[in-house]
Length: 278
Image (cartoon, rainbow, N blue to C red; front, side, top):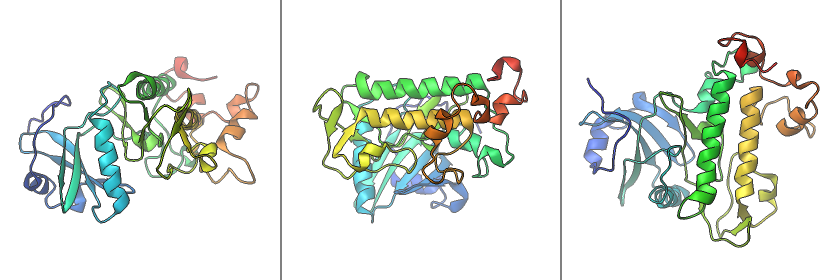
């Protein structure tokens, strides 16, 4: 079968077509499960390979997430933000349809079996690839904060919300808890919603402040960057008694940085010595 290319435009898709494409939302086609629903991999009747995000309509927060994500996606256009094909909504169900991104999420490269790379797994991303991905994410984030018509704070930057295309271009996804913000000052934005995020990535000040800030995204990006360079999740079991990923790296920087850099970047196993950190 010949599949349509990644660059697809908006189109109308009936729920019956979604049902047929997923074989009745068969678990065999399941790509992943999130807080508000499930994502299925399928091929539409015109040959387009898609990821179908089905929201749990019984969950009030899932409905709000659907509305918020639609509100963001119809306003943003950038090479590092995944474009939506279309959405579907009726009183019984809601769905978002995206192009299927070939290489999946960034975290799958570091933790293919759900474990950390320190458990004997080899991350096949070399230094140049990791830096290129980090730059793509930074450009997408900069656009959201400063370049698009409405300023957006993503609120949940982490490796599982970064997809990698066939050419390893990085795409930010999942705007279900993002904020379309009103400027309150240069750096602070008001929000009437309860703040959410992912443990280990959410900025500490979010726990005591009533403001959403672009600095919160920058903090999450920094943690994600450290994770990409060390191969350690911020929720790793090694971080106990007040230790965290940021402190762990800081205590070794710059003199003993080899103690925390992902050993796969030190071993020389990836391509050639030009991609080695040390």
